[in-house]
Image (cartoon, rainbow, N blue to C red; front, side, top):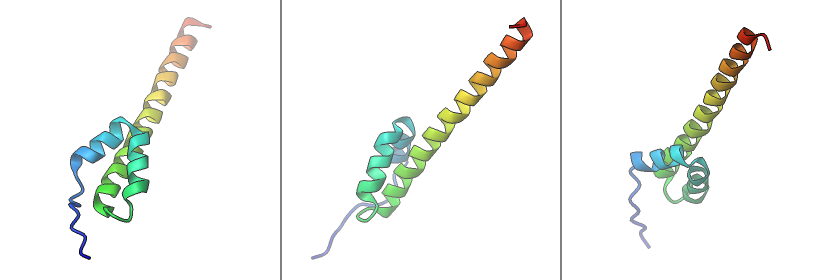
Length: 73
């Protein structure tokens, strides 16, 4: 039986994974064998989403820390 699956990688799956990383991770795990290109796009999107949130938190806390030091707290 031939399996015709559309597996073009899809930018929108990567964008979905970036906006909602847990969905990107789940899609990556579910599709890793059936749709490897789309799975990779969703997984990379999830990684980008998580890394960007971590970087933003670090920047936020550095700014808060510098502000607290400037006020002499």
